[in-house]
Length: 80
Image (cartoon, rainbow, N blue to C red; front, side, top):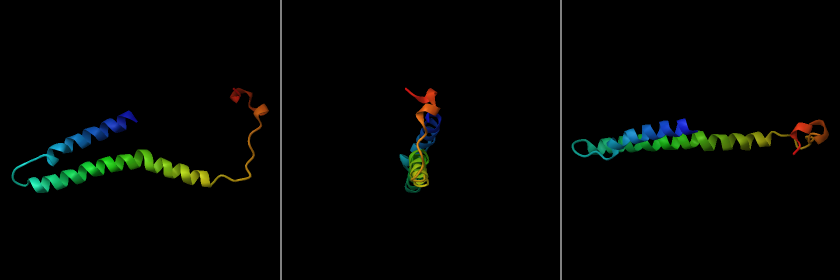
């Protein structure tokens, strides 16, 4: 998780000069920088949180309702 967040932070902070720029063409650079910055952050949040939550939700729907629970006597290593 840390390498992903550090890479994303580096890319997002690298775009900050576009957002805070002034002078000729600042409006175009601001718009472009804001889109890149927001896209990086939203894309990372979707990748790290939304996609796994959606997958977990879909995977829980596939479980049969009549599935048997494992017998604890057959798996003594898993008992507390």
